[in-house]
Image (tube, rainbow, N blue to C red):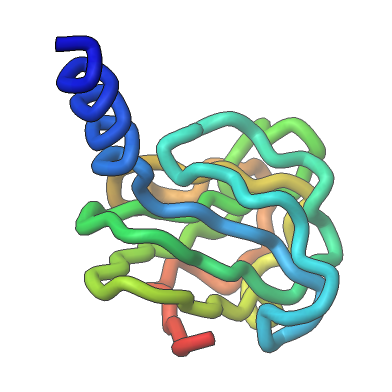
Length: 132
């Protein structure tokens, strides 16, 4: 009985691993990539300014969006990228042609309208991903 409970708990955890992201310093998602963060965590990532790409890895068939904020505390949205990953593996997303951001957050919905005052942005776009 204990084995069945352990296996059930273990497989339940594995099934909900989801999708993860690492911010990297180069455009190819190889150099100085940070810690993996779960896309299910909607918290503010405030130490990723200056990064050039995001490496996505894991397995999840849910739509997410990456919200860009010019301030360090995710205070508003000045750009957003809808990210839908429907294949396993590693995918690299380029940040260099997006609005300048000092903080980011993930959300489990499509992009909403930008809401930063006096913003100069490139606008909402669908993410272009490459196999990493």
